[in-house]
Image (tube, rainbow, N blue to C red; front, top):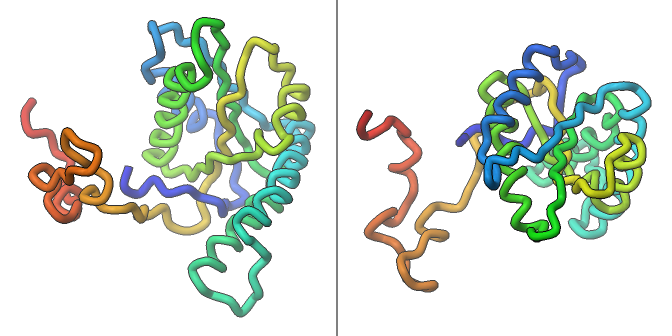
Length: 218
């Protein structure tokens, strides 16, 4: 988990069926409300569907560029921000080259979309972690937003009573996985009260917690 970084740069090697199937099986091991398992995972791999994904990616890029103040970095710019932006542009430019997966959840009139998310997002996280364990890289994209969702729904034939919860690109990474950079626990964990630091639990730093996740008992 501490090295499951978002990957945006991939090799040209395709993801084989056996590896992809293991990740999808891991997704099915996730919990869901009432164990309904009212999810569906659609692999997008044909040239026609990849072209639709690329169109959605281009639309999303037009939206996020001004939001994040992104521009294509100069070749001689090697700052951290430039490296991140360069990888983001590469992912969007090559969107029609990759296998990706749509994660969908059936709608129920008694539940809000936020509540239903609890029955599909764990499956997505299982997929991401299984991919990392098998050496794959993944990127949870926003390409199904910003106008891309109608394109993908129409191309796949998603019924109206199903919500498109997420879209994940998967491939073999070009570069290293991690580690991830995260705020320490001491900044985000509180005890009993909104503004009461949980120093007794996490101390002043999370470094001691990152060294091992060995179980304390059988």
